[in-house]
Structures are given as C-alpha cells and as structure tokens.
Length: 182
View: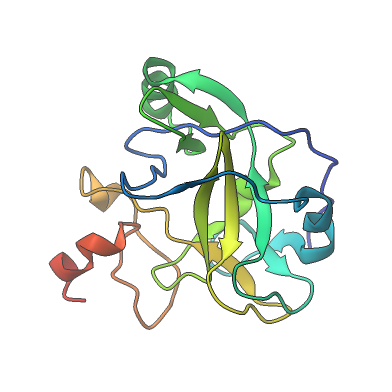
C-alpha cells in the first residue's frame, strides 16, 4: 500500500476555472476554521484509492461539520488559471471572482481527495482559505470525497469513477444531475 505522510503545511488559498472547483455564488464565506490544521494529520491518511490514484482516508470516526484539511497552493489570477487549466493542471480551485489557487504543490495533500457524486465532505471558504469539511459522519477507513462541481462545458472529458449508487457518470455539480436522469 502506497501512503503519503502529511507535511506540516503553511497556509495559503485556492484557484479556479472550468476544470477547477468553483464555489457557488451563494456559498457563504465563513471567518475561521479554527485550529483545524493541527488536527489534519490525526484525521486523514493518503494512500491508493479504488476511485482514482491516491485518495484521503479517515483514520478515525469523524463528526459532521469537522474541518478536515485546507486546500493549499499559490494564489493566481484568473488569466493564469486559464493558462494552467489549458496546460491540463487539474488542481486549480476558485477562491473568488479575481483569484484562484493552484493546488499543484507538494505541500497540498488535499489535491488527492477524489470526487464523488455522493460525497461525505464539501469545500467551504473561510476568509481567503479553502477548507474541506465533513458533510456527515465519516467512518474510520472510509475514503473522504467531495463533489468537484464542474459545469457542463466539456463534461464528457471528466468521467466519474466514484461507484456510488447516485453516480451520474461525470464529475458535474449536483445541480446538473437531472440532465443525467438523477
């Protein structure tokens, strides 16, 4: 089993574009995730995933609402994000209307969290930070997933392998599930 040891990571924010997760316009910005960064190593182990490549797995039972891990990377402009997405960087995360975060950095293990059409976690913005929080109780050993919320542009290029009962076959936002019969 291939496992990744979490580094002690500094704090930065997120990035975006079509290929990246962008928070819905109505997603509220919170002010703080508390002292969650120190707990991340106690909550998540990164290892081979049945969904895709490497994934994050709960080391113990995690309560609903628990901040799990911060999505880290360099802040970049939308123009820089568009260039990096065109160069096939899948780790761009939308922070706001002007700024994205390029999570393709070694100190960002959150980039290994996989997509699911029936996720157990979600992304939330806290000031200028992106955190992944538990949507429900997560069992020890369960893979931690969130919906990447891609739009329908070129959705065929993003097949989903989550295997959940609610899988629509593509990594699209839940608002688009009806298009796929869900």
